[in-house]
Figure 1 (cartoon, one colour):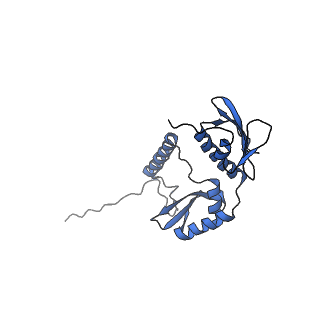
Figure 2 (figure 1 turned 90 degrees about the vertical axis):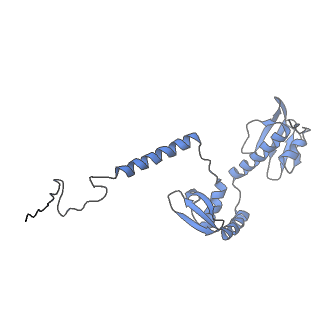
Figure 3 (figure 1 turned 45 degrees about the horizontal axis):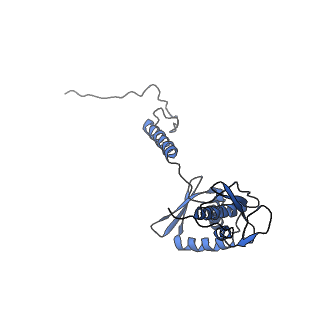
Length: 200
């Protein structure tokens, strides 16, 4: 009777009693590296084709930061899952879940007490002015952000000056003179005698 014995010889790179970590392993997972590289490439291509617009404003981040006691800049995004859980994702990785009703209540409380920054105020006023200009078929010049004021034009002709101070919107047909005051941009532009643009 013949008996065969099979023996395997260790490769020459084998070292007895040596600790080998994954990073030092001679057979790094090339497929995982290639997959990560592909995902990175696809992400950059998608961003180039359709840049993602940040759904959160700086005010949103301040509100969320105040609620969960983190720096506003550390909040990447939020989303609602299953209609009951609000997830907050952080820039450095990680996320936290919150009950939707509790979170909504806290947002309302914080919004009521959080003062508006100058930038947030200017963004809000700028949006309101843009909407009013669209209604009247007007466009405006460069905005003075410190005093929030600008010139209004229609068909290349100066219509007047408009701005907003701490109390209300104001307008005047000439650089100097009495201000006409109203609670909204649309109303104050109407006080300049401009008619709403006809629907096309």
